[in-house]
Length: 526
Ligand code: PLP
Image (cartoon, rainbow, N blue to C red; front, side, top):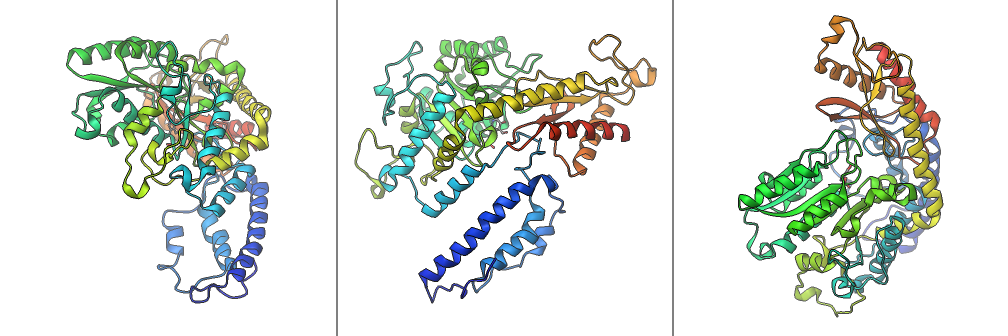
């Protein structure tokens, strides 16, 4: 990077130098980004630094005099980059793989340039209205009900459906699914126990979610004072879906004990295995008892954009809220979590406070976003999503999702067709994630394509699960140490499992196959 004509100092505010300096460095930064995106497959996926390396390499205090972009970018390259784990890498297969795509990068840059804050409509109509429109596009792609022009009070405006809920979905962007789901829990409390807003929780409200649901549900409930003892982890079935008979039983038991069931959270695409809870049945049960139904579709909501997977959201037309993360499988860099609710009136009732310094005129089409959640400030996140949806368009996004789903199937087939039968797939492959497990050093051949059995060798047959868990962890460690790929694990049925999650736009089948090659090498070596 070239040095500024003069370092910028507050005593000498020279706007034109300041802007020209940015123009030069900005062009170079965009070139850097383009080169980075082209070269990222050659970088190690996992940061190669040790704890404390970056911290120790940085000066103990910030500079008194401004520095040049050249100096800052040199340190970014030399000090910061080695400590970056490359989430934008095509061979990042851990957690839920994702993509910070080029249109979104531009959207982020422009949003930062505007630095506009949509706390209420007047403070930036663009933030409120682009968000409404973009989320409505997203809603349509996900097949979430019908809608027309959203109003600030869509409960009153909505025509209502069989469940008595308005037909319209109101959307708002929060940072993460964790925040979105916490807001859902507050809505549920506001619906069932409105006194809690003024009096606090009495400790009798009970929330239900499966034992496979994301920890953010529990965390959200803890944060709003529901109390961990009032969170029921409903057992799941053999395919890791919420056992709805158990849900019904638990609600009855809690009611009999004088508790107040208030919320059930269904997961469409659980974090470990991407299992899909039976939403329709869950809603049937919730309706009988007057519970708020929140749907966590943070990852798999993207799959609902494919007609062949639309049914994963069956029942959502009777749910109260849903969260979907564009920063998972929808090409948008962290953070962008879309929260939809049919009861924005309740969301607003739960969160609006109007101090004198923020009073504004009422207009049914002017959304004051500060009324719909904890944060006052509201980032222009919609801009990057708008760029993504327009640049790629629905068909290209659908093609990517289908490709990833197909490769997950193909990877599972590699495991199933391996003549050595050393690995097995341990959960249904519904989307772009495969959960599998090394079966042990002495796992034998399958005689007729049946489920793999443990070796006939007595010592191997007695091999403990703990020992096989250790092998699985050692294999993951070896594979990741290669620097070529990053995979992570989870626990299913109390067993250590390895997970392959496909989700990056740049991933190719060769990248996926490389994981299989590395796994086999690691299995030979452990
Ligand atoms: N819900 C599910 C199903 C998830 O898998 C995750 C994260 O992986 C979350 C919620 C939390 O997402 P966030 O990091 O946006 O809070």
